[in-house]
Length: 532
Image (cartoon, rainbow, N blue to C red; front, side, top):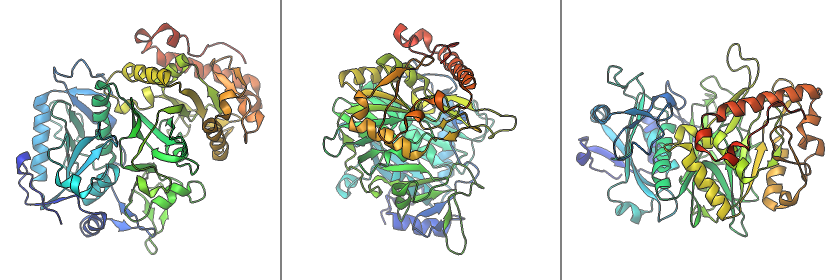
């Protein structure tokens, strides 16, 4: 057991346990945390309490003259003053000082030695310590012995609420960042993903200052050439699933940077959705949820501890976190060469986007800034049709700079390294949600294989009359009729109407960015009123 002193941070708890191995964190979680258990496969089962997902409306950044002009202020980055931050920091420390023991995780963010950041996590729950031990890059014994002072520190007092009467607080939850002191404070939520995304937000600020593009994407590499491929996409589009590709090396499933040397993963683990997980559909992820992994908010059988991945009675957002080396074909260290292909994944529940299209540079910028996917109908009362979701750079909640900062970096790097850009629809075919069917995973995998093999680089395309991009018309393993979405609809006029509806949603969303983008990017959007 490694004891550690936090007196320099105003924390006087004597029993501070630093970088405990998973077995000890298992033991402490089972002994001290209500509901903790071990699954029949060996993963630690833990529960995050009331909050089972992120609280984006409660994310705040200190408005400081040193960084004020850099930050994209608004609903993504809500400003607070330094006095409020200090009050909440003191509140977090007061709570942590009431605990009998605390846990410290010291680890790295970023596999590139030149650009990695030292991160320190202070928390009171062993489950949180195991989660961040898993999700950050674990130092060697020598690196830990010489770790020194961190570049960033997270105070996780999530079991203790924010004070609603504190200036700027709108609920008992507050997740706050101070870019100048590189401190993060968590109050009122025990959802572990807040820590992970807090680290990502910090990297999203500091990496672009160095000319490095931080990205919400998964990445794989060719085992022979080390050339990489990036897969951007919002939750539910297949970003994690498609990156678990046995034919390629896994660099990471969620957060990466693109520097002048190539790409590198920010994290040391993966954080996959567990809903409806089966060994047949996602064998790599299924086998990774073993001893050393964390299962969040899942339901299991009391007698056998067998997890029912289809049970969403606690939350739809069941999750599994596991070290990246648990994926058999992971490349460690998680670095690779420059991407040959950049893939934008979208789950189009309207059923009008082609399974795969090739984008021009201007179209790539347009769709990167748009960050489109769609939610299915039926999730809320009164919702009878798909709901379009636009998240700039496919990671809006985690951006710190204006989206154009990231879009310009992406365009510059794609041009310099001649990367091809693709839009891949993992959503519906043959009609919208409720009429058509979800694209089979096997077909999407065949498309991704065709991109990575280079076969689609020279495949025939036809311009989409509404969206303008080049629809690929031939791909090994994919029926030709599936590649042309209009031909899969029973009612062609209904397809035309729906395509124009989605095009209108694209254009309406893009209006907020038009003043800040080049004319060729503005012109790369869809054309409304066109019939196929």
